[in-house]
Length: 402
Image (cartoon, rainbow, N blue to C red; front, side, top):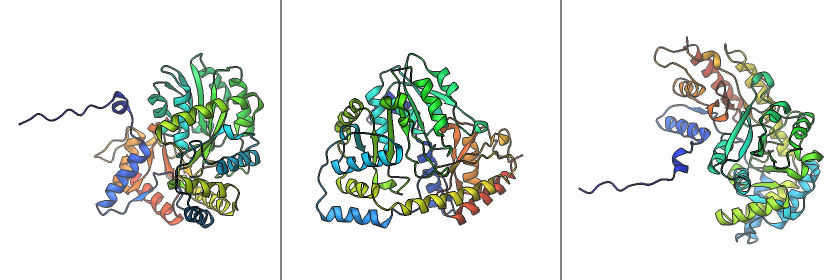
């Protein structure tokens, strides 16, 4: 009998963590496949359909023959629409050679890290952070340096914390606002203070992930790239998934220094080349079309946020803040660490989430992978009925923990 063939895998793959959000979503699907009534609040995906006028633009593009390869950095039409958007909404001025369109904002961030980082370089990441940030940095053999803020700071890192974390190895400062997973939004004044401590360090590039820009309940969005002292060293990342309910279209983009845009296009040319043609045509249309569906979606998310916070605050041991954007709440549930239902003892947020999935049939994501081990993430991108039902189940389940 012959020996089993070896299955060699790279150290990169073996040491890489699986995406916690994707893992929990799969566990929820598996449980649902067994016949259980599972409410999955794990994925960051709007439950709204892409607005009809955007879908119609894609259909027209298909009928017009936009089915061929595209330029690696994106169709000129879309890049020009992105330039107009940056100017209109963010006070940012870019030329065509400073814009790159990618297959999602995630690819944009990966392109940037590959373009900037050498082994041993450091990347300051504001924690809590989106799960893929640290893994992308590690894939580049660089070092993620987490700078954390708890719920008592509204999950927002201070300028003083950033200043203390900078070393001569720091190459990137990376964060999102509005933030995934916390929903926290940095104000113009907070960003100006952060820019002030970064500005003297000319080797540092700021990557500002603004994918949730339009789901913002403060009435205004601030971009750190508009701060004069760092505008030439800031890359602003955005996309269409959240604000336009276009998650499956896989379109993201960046605006930044021309040398970085060229480097990202060079890298992308070896991985995926350009994003698909008819999606880009529809995206160009979306950026300059009626935004009413986006604002209606934002307003619905705000109503859901208020409902979710009201219900969560009634659960003993839950510490909840009031996020100002995105569609997540991020409660601190460290009160339950060390407690047990007689069979399972809760030691971590991941334990807590697995307990909820198995006992309440509600899928949520532990904060460990977000750099916040005392918390867990609830996505309220679901119907009000589902949210009320899910939080009711959570409240009943935690009564078993003593």
